[in-house]
Image (cartoon, rainbow, N blue to C red; front, side, top):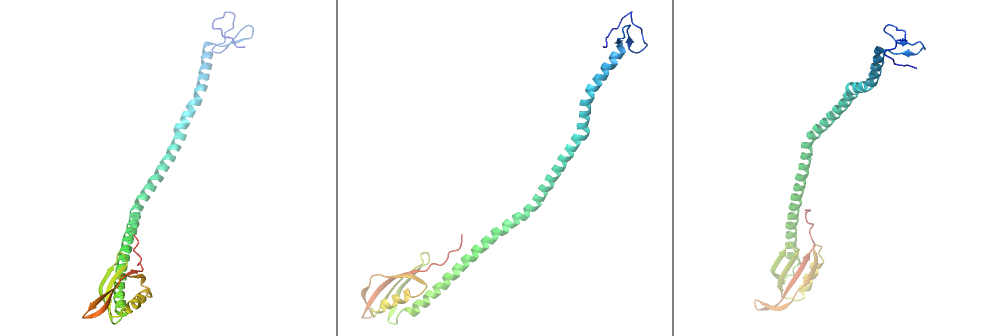
Length: 207
């Protein structure tokens, strides 16, 4: 057992060291007590100080290095995306221009088909109308794909023949004969007629 006794006449003094009493007990001097207290305080403080130094000189620099490396990667990725942005814009612009050009080509093709069909229609009626029959009115409605014709014939039997010619041609979808009535042309009797003809549709350009 260690017993602290700063003043005791019955003890034998040992210079600058612990005192041993007559009973064999070790009595610490003031200086020894302060040394041991200081040692304990040093041991208690050394761990947090060491942890602080480890964090400050090893852990934190490693973390900062990792953060810097990550920031560098993000910066490089951002720069790469910025370099690619004009290319992406050009591709999109090219795609838009391509769509516009294709749209124009489709419109031009439709106009060409319409003009080609108009010529084909004129040729058809020139050939299909009987010799003693003639047209007095020809109306072509492109928006509705519909033709209305009016005419006269010296022979009423030529009107069903003309209708049959129209029905048998692939350009036409259907034909209806309107009211027929008697007429006069240069003093001769005629059969006046009207027909409504529906055409097969031409494909519209894609919007």
